[in-house]
Length: 227
Image (cartoon, rainbow, N blue to C red; front, top):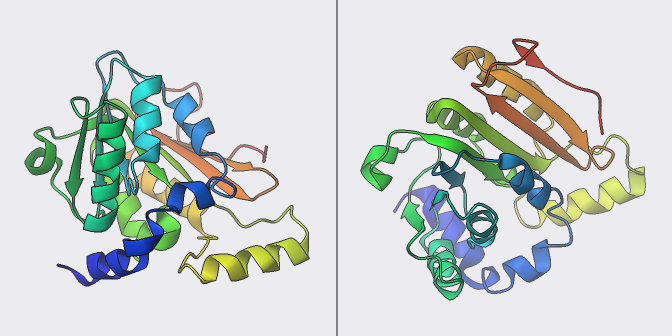
């Protein structure tokens, strides 16, 4: 077991049982991202850092004609995810695998080389080599594929006391907002020849990026105004 996997298992061995109930109040924007995925009929969706499987269950229910996949480095979290998927009656449509998000072989894990949609939801702020995860994910996009990322932002539009309290809370769980994430997503898109749209959500509380192979009216990376 890798050091990253061991660390995640230690952190979530007990937390995984209350993770969804406690995180729903501050992992903002997850459902917004899921609703924007719109995979093609019969398409594939991969979640990197799938955790308890909460997002995968919602994705599978929202897009019943899609095949869903999830990977996580924590075997403990995957055990919880497997139980969640089974309770939802989705075991036939959701496949899970244990892997390092910085270097994984989707063909070996899932029998396919690429995905129509890839989702990374509040995982990069917990992975020290987070830029390597972005790079790895963009390499597994199918033609016309999209990578959707949502995570903690720089919180520029929020009151200073709230920001201080939030960051102290996050630090207690080894979570670090990646202030350079918009620039990193643009750089990753440029390297792969992708379009990139980045928006700030909820006054900077979260950042949402979409890296896409689809043609657009304005080619190249761009950063729209904050929402």
